[in-house]
Image (tube, rainbow, N blue to C red):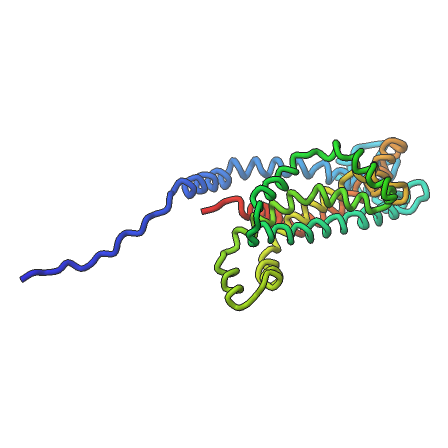
Length: 308
């Protein structure tokens, strides 16, 4: 009497564990008490100067000249602490500084310089990721390679072109310059994120009769929030803090906060009460934007960076 052995299913092939092992070691190193302690020390070292600037911006001129900002704690315990909004009133509304108009210019420059490259990069990244056309890989590598071109060597040719078409001194040269130099990174980041989206979603949409436009708006765009937010934060901080492009491409009526604060540092270096208020006005918006959207920043930058 013969007996038949039950069929044994073949053992599934285990994926390589190199990446998992490295990820485990990296996680262990980053979550160790030493790593946490170092991160806390770095955070404190980065935060103390900003906190000192904030405290100084609220102190009267005589107190700033007489003692350092750290003395406010002793004055507060002694009941002698004095804070005032006079420095901000002088920085924003005095005719010699008038930072409120430069603040508006910074907003007018930054918002279009963020939305224009995001809009163009979304369309280009979708084409590179999901539309098969001749020379796609070569073109994508060429676009990515443009990131190594420094903006300084293009200022004179770009300015000459803007003068030829008679748009120099307006907001358009600043918008276009920032948008052009942001596109390579934006396309690369959004392309990597799109390639991580499962192909089954796209195929299912195509089976249902969706074309590229429908797939882009209904499938891709809702999943791209982390990547869009990550690049939006990066571009916002870059454009808001820019001095070179705005100074070269802009005019007197289009100068942003950075240009005016730099002029204040040179012409009013002794007026620490006004200068500290102006400096904090220039950094408060980027701080708010970064802190409110920081959870998307790391998630978007890491999107597409690890496969497997």
